[in-house]
Length: 350
Ligand SMILES: *Cc1c(COP(=O)(O)O)cnc(C)c1O
View 1 (cartoon, rainbow, N blue to C red):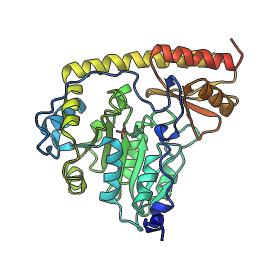
View 2 (cartoon, protein in one colour):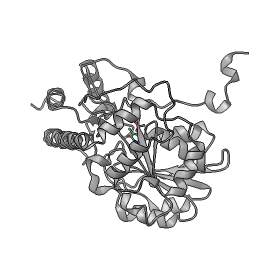
View 3 (tube, rainbow, N blue to C red):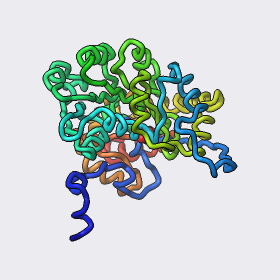
């Protein structure tokens, strides 16, 4: 018997998430993982590493609660927002019985996390203008415990209408949780649904330091929810989920100076996004969708050929499953200029 045969059937049949890192590539310009181009400096102390970390480091929880504008009882921290997704699924869905619902095209980890734990996935595609199809969701809520809504949505970049999220929260009251993935909300904080937490016991919000805070490598995310949801998640989370250096760095990122730096960098990236959007929009047959995160979804006449030409030239973007679309992360100005110039050259419209 081979070792592979010892694995659970589910795992043998699983296709892992095709993260930007796994897809590889080689080049100088990496605009494929919605990472920040800013590499900020932090202080690390190694004087307490003989001791376990606090399960939920109090200083970190308080700092994020203050940033998000919620009481600390409504905050849980985990290994990135991805672990938040996994914890929610493990806490609320009965394997082989219950399901999650999500609305493609959207982030791939909801489905993969669910499949890993033998939770069925129901999909209700977004409408033609990439909004929630509420009647179709209503028709598919049987056995659904979690509905994932990503806003700004990855990879399309648009925001979900607030009144639709509220309608969805009403529709699922006492039946399912609505998980609003706000991984990119720091680029458009006014669109957050965090103010709805007190009104809706079934609302859960996912946040991360990976995008606007430029800390993808730190692996630090947050789940915001009412305290009874947080208490349940704490029953399932690992005993020491947050390494001491991670908590130390995250607290620095959330200090007044850290927040000011992030705000500045967000403004800088939004200016670069506008530059890319304007430059690409000027090209014939190119359609740039309005984006509210640190990335743009762009439709080209022949996306495969262009993607490959960029790849060969060392400009690594992300091919989207949407027809002829490429997702471009917003880099620094130099990266955006080089990418735009190469695309213009390829489309021979310069
Ligand atoms: C990047 C991303 C995440 C994962 O964030 P981590 O905190 O790095 O795990 C979650 N949701 C969406 C939509 C993302 O784009």
